[in-house]
Length: 222
Image 1 (cartoon, rainbow, N blue to C red):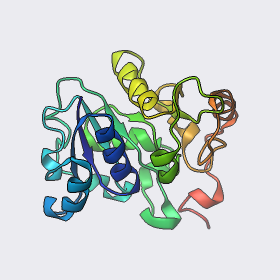
Image 2 (image 1 turned 60 degrees about the vertical axis):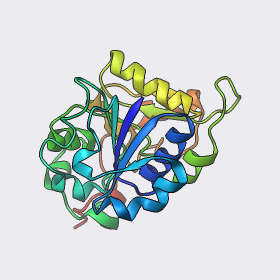
Image 3 (image 1 turned 90 degrees about the horizontal axis):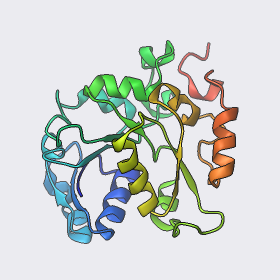
């Protein structure tokens, strides 16, 4: 597949490496000049591009940037992907640790729904709760006991199949986490976040989640 990755941090950069290892045609961008990604491009064979060009003719787009920077993306940033191609967002809202207050999210809008609104396209939420080093090193073949499972929130249909296939090919069990309206079940502070559960325990943790923000994951601490 042709895959565009917007964001070359720990998760975006790791996905660029892993997806290139699987033989995909990967274009990767950060918020700066493509020349700043020369080392990553040389190492992986990915093509460094401007962010506005990352989604061009892509079969899949991945957005992996700090939540606070999403509104700074160019208008229509993913519109040049192939018609209807899925968009993955890996972001997390870290109000105290990095992002400051995003009022709509604090008022109850689901994090991924907010991202989708900002970029003007539906999204799938995945890769947001796994440590980058485990994403890089801990993938295992399908059927391996205790294989790490990754929850995936988003609409059902062919695009979900594409996302599930990508997760499986990277070495992780894909687990449906419901529609994007329920992606709060895998946000920071929930039972599944940051855990390397297998599929059975991932399903259990998703079911145990509650939508209330805990004190650590809200800007409104007073």
